[in-house]
Image (cartoon, rainbow, N blue to C red; front, side, top):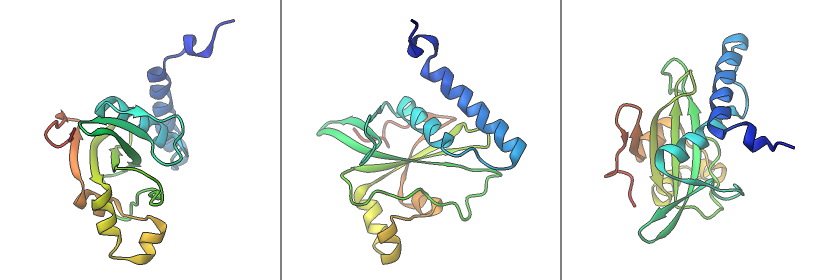
Amino acid sequence: MTSPTSLYSVDKLIEQARQLAVDFKKMTGKPLPGVSNEVAGNDVAKFLGLELSEDRSGFDAKRVLSVGLGKVQIKARTIFNNNYHGQRLGQLKLDKEWDSVVLILMNEEYQAFEIFEATRDDVFDNLSDNSSRMKRGAMSVAKFRDIATLVWTIEDGLDASAWRV
């Protein structure tokens, strides 16, 4: 019997999921739930050299740092019509152990165009301003972009000076 892994490559399946999400949005006017997170996780791992975690209960990926392994939460947003207003990150897992949060922004074709990273300290410093947001782990995309470092763009790829190791 042929195993599913021999029939399909993950990259090919991700591209098919990406196209399915685009087609679904065009036909229904709504995003296809869950697809952007899977596409984003795969893209972030590939573009930033991360290893996705099997158990994503506290963090989504690991990266090799000069001081050991870094634990990374991955957040994704698909931006339609270049409109960031009102866009929010998914809930941050504030009670879990992680070192940074990476936000991947994708266009209406579910293609990555920017990736930002904020450290745990940066996130907590900026959530502490509002205790109700702190409880929920809520932050807007605009606020995250303000406190984070741009580490990857579609035009230039990985900025090694910004992506600390």
